[in-house]
Image 1 (tube, rainbow, N blue to C red):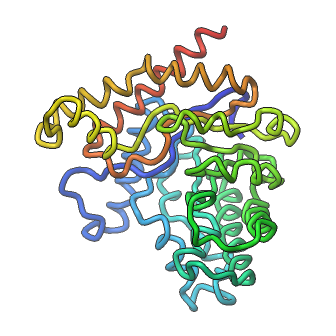
Image 2: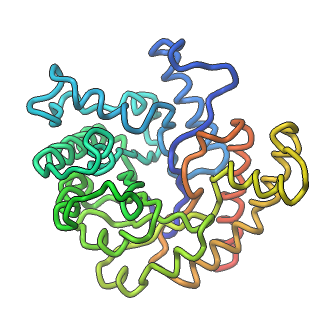
Length: 323
């Protein structure tokens, strides 16, 4: 668990260096890249960085889970194999946010709109083993369950009771830690408040400020849950499309101007106003902040770092204003 108050984390994905292909990297080179990127995030001001998610969020977990040599039963990975290689690059004592793709998201990738609860629960147990392994290795300051389809996808056909049971199983090793769930929609936030080990509900409130209106502060108080409010937009394609229309240009053809326009849209002042609004609405129920989602689709590492730096500046200004 990190110190009391609002902390700044990121969601995980990040641009690769120019011309770097993951398949061409040795294991050692890959871990060096992970370490280098963690240091970039920390230098930009991220207080609890997520290990860089360069790999696909589904296959990085499902490939080993589905491997019969690594599993003890269908979709239940053996505890000793529930490893996240990127964590090996984390330096001692660095606070780290460990993100694991949730059981519902993993299930959808393999089975779509079906409802085999035994498989869902085995996937949840596998997720729990990833968290447990990271916790026992002292690599995890903040845990995060990534469930972007909840509240959005019509392919989720499980009963809510079964979904909540799966989320409970998956996050049991995270009790007494800051444990987030990353949602792309606030529609499942109320239900997630019923999941004991979850402590922080994450919503993408920078691109969708109206989402905050759908979160009940009293429910957070009554269930002793907290909020992670996104203060920086990360939907780069929509952002650039809007500016192209407004300016009558194609910013993708002018990377320098694209960067300046995006950082103007997402300036520290704009981000600080979003953070202040979230604080007014939720007070001490606001626990974490940062970008809405990952930055893997952004055109450059320098632009991604600049956005993280703007988040840091906004949080520093906010902290100074409430002293």
